Length: 524
Ligand SMILES: NC(=O)C1=CN([C@@H]2O[C@H](COP(=O)(O)OP(=O)(O)OC[C@H]3O[C@@H](n4cnc5c(N)ncnc54)[C@H](O)[C@@H]3O)[C@@H](O)[C@H]2O)C=CC1
Ligand SMILES: O=C(O)CCC(=O)C(=O)O
Image (cartoon, rainbow, N blue to C red; front, side, top):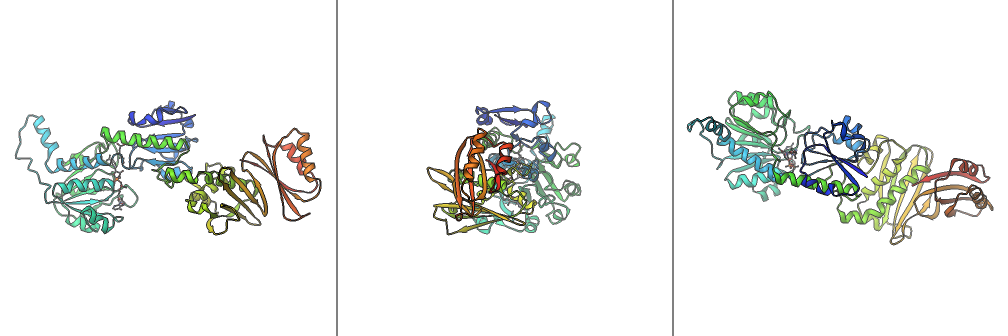
């Protein structure tokens, strides 16, 4: 049974895919509510009100996925979540139109003084001369950040006869041409635009993108809009430039601190504001809620998700092809980890045959996840596998080889420790399943599943019988047994599988047998 916490106000209709799950319980409470049962939560859904920081994550040991019903994930410590192996997803385009429309509405309202004029009429005044506005037609709109919202805004502004100048380091000239906008440098936008609007994410790079230095380059009488994130425009600098009459007005939907409280910007008549309403439409809220609910459900059903911030996105079709290898990779990593007990310096995987046509980097991460599973306390999965390896000084390598050793496909994983290395090879046979076909220098053939015992021994008559006798004497049923050797009388191996885990006492007795070199219990 999964427990899902919906911590912010999210459209109930959009939550339907989660409410319909028979194996999930949905709790709608703030994270500060004692009845939110943080230590039992598997999935967390938020908007921007809940700050998902490391301290909160520490209280949620079972958490597997955080879903942001919206775009900006700046209220989530994605790095801490990644370290803990928690998938972070968002709803990247469910509120694009609403936010573009809100920005446009704010721009039109600001240029025609609508909020201020509205208030005077409500106050029974009739001041027609105080509210002379400015047309949008023929003006230059500077858009900083030409992503989804910037692009939708540009379309609407073009329809109003505006010239669009854009700064976005990731926008190509070709795409700018197709969108009918002029690609500029930041300075060019600052120098030429009549109205400047920001539509970037809030990152270390965009924090203070519009600071005093940038403001000093703008035209006198310029207008500003921020319907993206507080902090992209430095509030102190903006207040200074409105105060000295250089900036003619600003329209703000977002603030560095929300709610903004006694913010000096709100004292200016030429500043209009809304309380972070960009995405507040019925349509957007339904869109984002149902987008993330569907994704969380897919994730809990162990199906691939598309809108992850910290996990490589793979489509459902691709996942279906990769699924058998995905499971086998995890098992191979786990076997390796249980056979080579010491710390390793390097883990390399060679792919050959048909598997090379798939997203092998996903399999490499799964192998690492399997390897770390029983070694470290942190939940390691495809999200944090590479980071975990890096933090532990393990070099991870991936190679493609033309030689599949006679199989249709083959994965060979080598772990190198200081003094030894261990190699495991597996193949997936259609309509049959995964098989481990090579273990530490020996050809073998076993199913990587359940409770296994890997025995290295000398190839002498009677060893197999003595092993069987001890197990039989202790009522341990051998489900399967595979043997392999390099040469007659030389080193040999056995891999046995049992219906239940092998107990310590029987293991110790087996260890005392002549000709036994080493024993490894493997639990998959
Ligand atoms: N007010 C509200 O309620 C809402 C606010 N937002 C915010 O709007 C912003 C934009 O959202 P989307 O368009 O959906 O995101 P997006 O990811 O589609 O677009 C962001 C664009 O910013 C560009 N960019 C990144 N760094 C840049 C830099 N240093 N200088 C210039 N451009 C840069 C990127 O190349 C990208 O094209 C985000 O901050 C998001 O959180 C989104 C939805 C609702
Ligand atoms: O949840 C909201 O209403 C805010 C939306 C937003 O800011 C975003 O999607 O980035």
